[in-house]
Length: 109
Image (cartoon, rainbow, N blue to C red; front, side, top):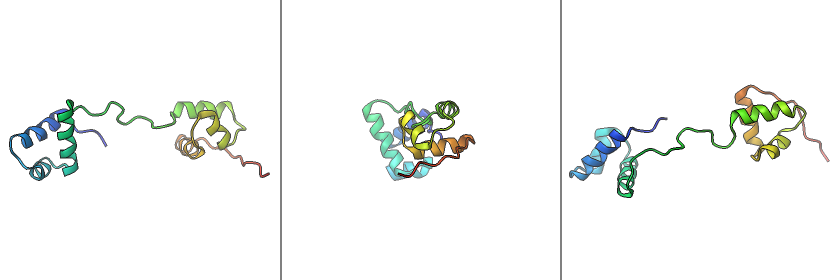
């Protein structure tokens, strides 16, 4: 989901500061009451701008996953996870999204 524009955020804050109720602002601008409260707090802190990291890859960049899987073709998910510094489930999820398959099993002691 995309972040709301700064213009909309400013209109919500201005509506409430002009005497409008927070619930009325939420209904009028079709946002949740929690969103209204967050925008009021952000305005009090000094900035209504959305967060800079909006929509980025969280833990594992797809290019890094593809490069490491191509370089270490015989590695298990656990070994790839150790090399990339993430949990093996993260590696499995990212490789599945990329369409890269690894048919390896860990050795049972």
